[in-house]
Image 1 (cartoon, rainbow, N blue to C red):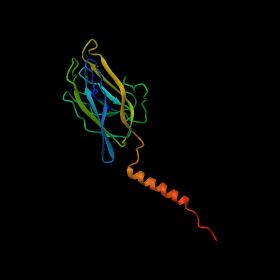
Image 2: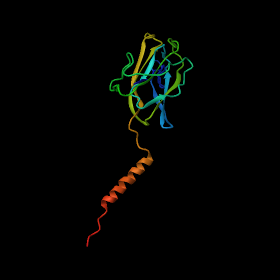
Image 3: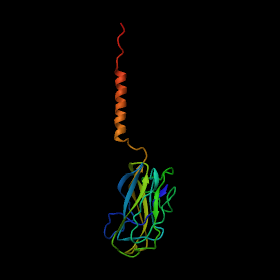
Image 4: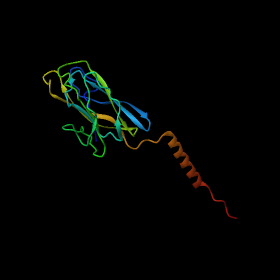
Length: 199
């Protein structure tokens, strides 16, 4: 399983409450014989990132390499790595399981600690990965950042939820559907053909 470890949070943030890194699938684009999945993230005004903070998206089927990474101006990410199972204390959210036969994807924050006191303007960026599948389903994600203000400043900020990920069993292309329909039609026509009467 692949560990998509990053250091930022959802594009939706609520003033006064810290939201940890939340991935939102914004685009799936065909690239040759594979598909590029792009996730949007935002480091919320009430959270910071410490070295080792991360994001994990569980069960990213058909993983075929990482795509472009839009590093935020505040620092850098480690090279993405693959792993099986949850990472440290990050486990799938309730209602989701971590299939050991499917890679998770993840990124981990590799820069110096940033915005550990706040608030600060939200920081947006994108993360991406390739899959051989173009169908999507919902699976879980878990993330870890740090709260940066109020009485809980300096405390871990965990977030779990659902996110769109690729799933196996691609839907046939329109051309394939047309061929299948023609094939079924021809088979039906042959079955309905009557034998000529024998005199």
